[in-house]
Length: 284
Image (tube, one colour):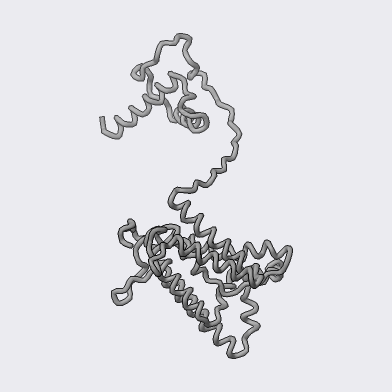
């Protein structure tokens, strides 16, 4: 993968090293999930289901003010084979994404995927109750990897882009057959978010810029800054040094209306002040 242009800044480097092995933010995410899996196992074995239920996402409870469930739903992770596979996907594909984009961008990607599902399910909860727990986002990271490196050959020499499409299709059919609409929504939502996020980082998708219309302030014209009756140009050498108050007015005018709004005499006065400042700085 080294031929794809990893960066050399601190953002693209490991967080730390352990006995010569580089540790990235993706490794620490997996470490947190492994700890939550152990805690979930202990609570389940000791009759602590009430604590786990208080951490899992429930749209009805969120609307009643238990907003912490939007954050803690991913901490309920009973041991399973899919959990292990998910952890390997976070380590492998998350590490490659972090190497390419940098730590901050990778964490933005993962954070967006983590919070997208409960936010969508909270909105749907206005119509019907929704529940969620233990979704760690490993598959969405694979979709992001396949978007970044679509031509990489994976298992059975299948290109990453086709593998992602095949798996999204299979998981969608499984959810449809079981009428598991929550899984279907989270699958499509996180996969679409991962794809769009990577394409935005690549510059292939441009987000629209929202510009707020600002009220244009009225311009003040100083008595000695009125344009001359004759159209002959005013040379900067013929202009005396401007006071700081006058220069502040000119700079304020440029900030609000642009430099093109200055009259020839105002331009000359500004240029004269600039030359005076340069002489003082050089000690002339």
